[in-house]
Length: 132
Image (cartoon, rainbow, N blue to C red; front, side, top):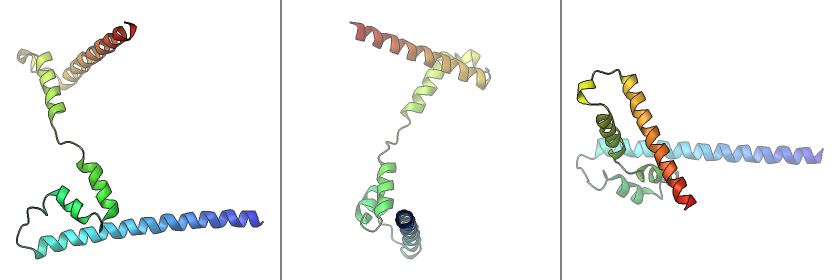
């Protein structure tokens, strides 16, 4: 009986910890939203540093500990369109202009097949290297 009560107490403690953590995260989000709306309505002058996300989160990381960690994960993703441009270039190389009226499904299939062949060639070449 005492064992069951102890386990129930542990579960209650964990539940309370999760609830406290959740409410503190909610409070942090609400404070951030309030901060941003106060700054945009009460500050006619623009501070370039404030509009730089990296500078902002570096300066405010003590006030918004959880949000600054989320921002760090999001902001570390490089902003690049290289992969998209590469795919469009690939599609342009596979489908000549005279066939530009092909259906989008057919174009997708052709690009997929080409990519699959390229991937298989890469695998085949890496297998050759491993054997040597």
